[in-house]
Image 1 (cartoon, rainbow, N blue to C red):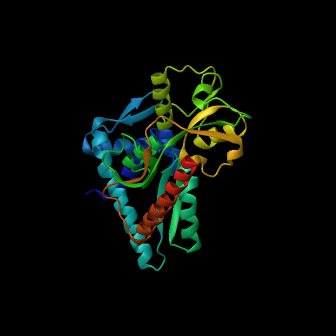
Image 2 (tube, helix red, strand yellow):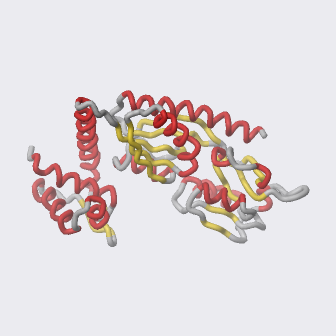
Length: 303
């Protein structure tokens, strides 16, 4: 083994994760030419092309896709070695890299992180906001350790721990007197939509096609929290996961159960991901918070 190639493999991994030599260079505080040189070094050493051009960026070649999992595991193990040495030196610490949508982060992660920090658990958090589909992909590619997401067709090779099952609701501004159902108001009021490619947007598009509804106006929003903010301000009707509505004042909102399938919320991780007592404690706390979240969503739907 040529150990001098390890830094070059780290550059390869970051280019794969970012899809851009320039972005990898920015994150590593190097020049793009230095990153490109390291990538070429690996490719020439093994005689295989790992990347292909993709517009202004790059994408993994078939060989690169085949190698990505092994390279990811290599650096997972390396990080585990550093944590072990830190523990032996009397300074144990675990870094948890996690991707979650905004409302799941607020509803599930915030209480868990507060508990762990209050108990001075030896842990550092690196949390990134992502929709459910991206969160699963990032875990698969090793960009994060955990993905907190609504279940989807992606992430088939991941270990998934169910946390709770939540329904989806129509939500809109509350009107005085006897107002028509939100599904009827969809034909006359602005429709709030999540970004294309998100799971919520897919569910919404399927429903609109099935019911043959063409909205008169649309408002595209980047997150569930922003969708709820528009509705709370008196504008728009949207499809929202129940957990996002459990802490919103109901005096301004009209809420109805949507005719779409409830989805489980899951914690996703790679099969070979290292698990130590700190990580096990994090998972146990998150599972308990998931059970509380399920009770809150049931109360919302029942109310």
